[in-house]
Length: 360
Ligand code: SF4
Image (cartoon, rainbow, N blue to C red; front, side, top):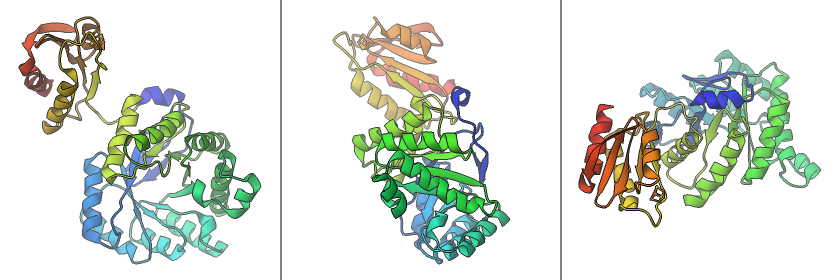
């Protein structure tokens, strides 16, 4: 429930990225990035579509050269509506081409593109088409002077860099900005976000960069993103994982869902950890239920399902859920909306839950 987050959320101005609004009281937008060769239009288009299907709200695509602008135009022409962000490093002409190609946001650090005329040209091109700019500062690529001043990519150094880049755009009255300060150190990243939150009202894009893969990467990202969100800071997220990009989206949704602040409807599965009292083979049962729910395309049902291992603590949780079971020996008690429905056989648990959920 987004209201819970909005009650503690830092006030940020609203920025429009295609069909998605970032900041204000809007849902936290989930982002990811393609890892295809941008000039391979077909592969990039397929990955954008896969990301959208996984629940991504905004997709970033690297734009290594002026040529890349053609890919953005082709993806738009293919009828893809998910907002696209062009990731640009040093070449302001690429930014101008991408703006002309109709991208929905540009990620660029104005301090990296050369003289003021170039910064002004990018600001003017973006303003003309209502394209916001994300300034993205990473611990690994801080300005030499800032790094020398702080001695390390500290929270203060990250925040100072982001505000410096923003000031270059503000000179030209360009304030349609989103900021991000990322680090592979969650503590530095959360600290930097706190400084930014107090220093400006730009929406903040949060994420732990180079978090790695697998469970360790996911936990690292979740610690930083969750830590920031629990302080009410964060308007859009990216979980950086060394995985297939749609995995980043699933992880981001899981983080938002764990905090119960995901605006997208989602099936929430509550299951006990099992213990010496467990009367049913719960671990494979939960896995099988998740697979069956996915197969039945019901992961976007806004329902809570409880799968509990015994009749001691199980019924309490099962009663609180929309539907649930409390396991017994080769059987389970089925609960629906707080009431016991009946006892069912172990083999019937999954098909029965799926059938009941389909009707809810
Ligand atoms: S619900 Fe029952 S089986 Fe599950 S952990 Fe709690 S006491 Fe153990």
